[in-house]
Length: 294
Image (tube, rainbow, N blue to C red; front, side, top):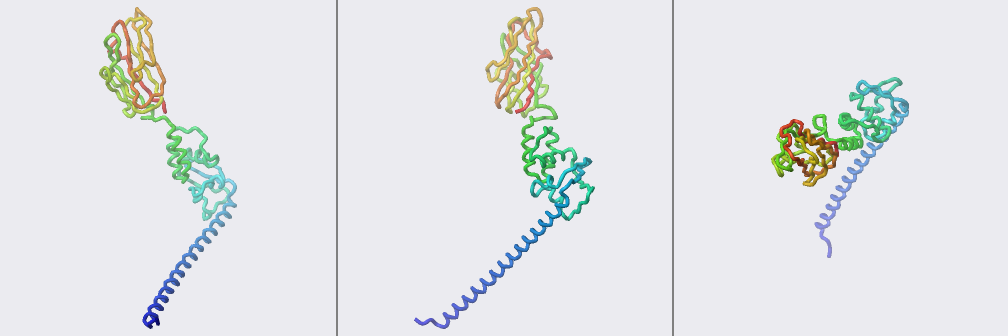
């Protein structure tokens, strides 16, 4: 069947349009590729220039960080890619012998930054306050692995509250009956993040641990004359430590000191037996906890 002239014209027009679109697309893609190649070439030229300039400063570099002077080398400062120091040593900044580069940061903290650049890790023992500063400066110097390591060291530090270890102390205890748990009438101090005073057998007779860790437990209670009677520490309703009285003619004071690893939810009580009344209200009666760490 013979193709009509109209159909032939339509087909030819379609081919021409398709070719035009193809040519325009090819032209655009070619321009994009040329632009990218140009950018790559420019970047390679800059890097080559940078490397050439770095050869001139391979020797010592003098830095003043805050008020502290440091002597180091370009190879040490440029150990980690894309760090702050790659910008600091940009070839556009011409360095001559004796020039000092100034960095407006804490000079004492910088020695740990330099330690990390030299050894690839932190070696020194660093206190918590300095670690907090180092965390900020590690981010400033664009050293993500140092940020990570500093956070890990901070997490290893025992939690502190107000510059001290978390602790609690109860006093003004009272105890009644021939064998009973002490109740604590006065809370001298308590960090509610770690401790909770609650009631199990008698009013306010139980301390509940809210955070796991290693704790120093101190107990001091008093009673009148007694022989072979004792005070005891109970952990989760089981006796774990005991102290005996020794005098039948004088007042007795029981002392218990324990360091124990405690779990979240553990409960502790002070139990006491006697043949005469304990010294209720005596200021020396106390139940104290100090959290030492994880």
